Image 1 (cartoon, rainbow, N blue to C red):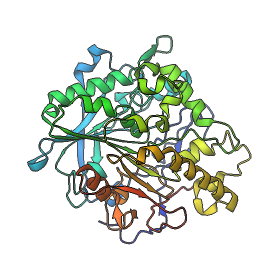
Image 2: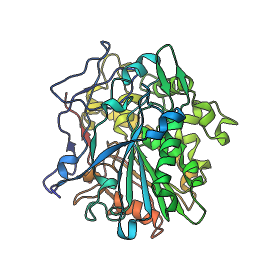
Image 3: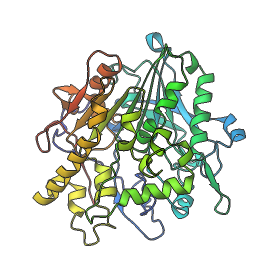
Length: 424
């Protein structure tokens, strides 16, 4: 699988520059030759998809949901939403895996207006084909349990984890994530998902949050005889203090929830006793979700480190800059701070993990989104806990072959990590 010669300690990512405006909070890839400068505020990130480690991944075309327009289920700019569907076969013909795409949020008019000019806010800019790798792969040797299922990637173009329902006429913005979710599910049900014997709702990053928010709704689409579970990859965004003592992510979420009209679509079990912004944080939702849920997360989530814990706004003198790019450059006191973040994550999942039906894979890596990348999902040197790779852990949990509550020892004990190392 082309991964034997890669370092197990540190996965050095290819140089794809992307620029993120503070407020856009998106982890988008832009070709290195066309650097994107947005409103003068620049912050470099990189993203790595792991596609180069896959031999001839299947390319799956984009389907626009033509019925969505009449329902007002449109992207930020009013264009139709869409998904990529690769049909299952054989024993997987009546099994469905839905992957909700991630890609940050937009929390104010300015960032949402910018987002309209990208694939995260308009289907005009979406790739017409996407490679299906990791949990979406159609090869048994890359995806042993789900390779022959009907596999779907629902594109993300609303900026509120498929949860908003509002508009800003003056700025020509449509915040219709909830309607997009419903329109996509209705369209897929008409294409055979209604006959599913097994279904799994998954998602990565902002899509991982969406899979938590919509988990019980997804369960409700099917009869009780259908086996339905949910998987959230890198969706455990914590309501944590940043390095300056502020609440960067809470401020972002507050903007998202209020701007995009998210409150009515949040679980009542939460909003009955907490404010809407608190109910956008998974830690306040996961214990009350009725459907079996699996949390896959890096304890030192690379996105949260860069955008929530130590963004430039909280680190104006750049003391954390090198640490956020390469964990090997973190000082002892910075590692201690990050151990505190891991402890918060462990506390957040305590009640959730006590339920027999739930699953957990919390590895002590500096990573983000490990189900979509082939090298982290299932390859010859994938990350493991107790010698079990992520794909096998998720499969064991989904099919009830074994209980999976895998919590890694703290950094730096895990030598199987594919840690993200960013280059300036």
